[in-house]
Amino acid sequence: MPELNELLSVDFWHEHLLAVSYVGAGVLLFIVFVIAGFPYDRALTGTLAPMGLQLSYSDQHLRFPIGSVLENVTLLDMHQPGGEPVFQSDRVALVPGLGMLIGRPGIHVDADAYDGQARVTLQQSGNLSTIGFDLKDVDLSRYPLPTRYGVNVRGIVTAQGNLRVDDVTKISQDGAMTLLIRELAVGMGPALPRISFSHLDAELTIRNGVVTVNRLEGNGPDAALSVHGTVHLGPSAQLTTVDLSARITPTAIGRARLGFLLGFLPHPPDSRPYVIHGSLAAPALS
Image (cartoon, rainbow, N blue to C red):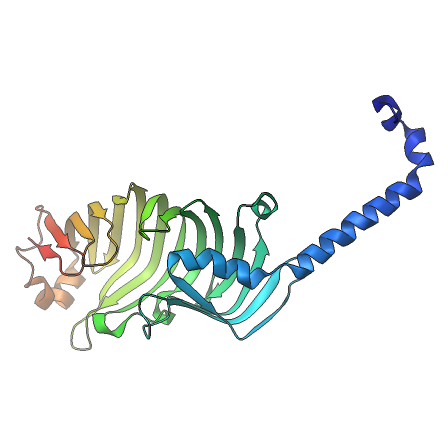
């Protein structure tokens, strides 16, 4: 067996160049066959299933130089059959994570998302699913919000963050997120005026299933908004509780446009905060 010094010598590699070439070609072919035969769709389905999400698509083909592409993708909440899709995309590219080589299921996802882009990394470890995401220029007006809420939203979203979700409770345990929405407009029905902000940005952290709103601020043209507080996550909106404090300072334009809506607040907008508390499904405002 050659000594280490001999293996490192130029003469050794010259003498064994052909054998080394065969080994290198064999390793390369092995990697190519593994990549080409990798079950990308099943890997993504297996990663999403513990989160209660069901994947469907119309077609699949290889992506050069590595990965696969799914066409006409839809994600559904398995706990709400017949409900609106959680996510839809014409094209989703998949690349296996390096953790697959050591038995840690994971996959990188790059998707067209409502006129924007979504990049997501999904990994599993024990009963926890780790989600890293990066959204860019996603158009909220294209997203199908459930009609039962009677809310329509417009705006362009950019967001980054990471979450660890318990596969048993489906509750986010830990994580952080930054969010920026440009030209945000929220409407509560056809007869009511929209509330508009030039931009709204937020920083959130999650620890042990509690979301802390470190900063949530919006500005113009209708009002300045500032929100902070906590959200205790539950398995449903009814069992999720909020404890938030909000300050609203309408602009002159906002007072003229939204005077009817402002009249429904517990007190006129001033230095006093509004307190939002109770179940997320039906919070109380004081």
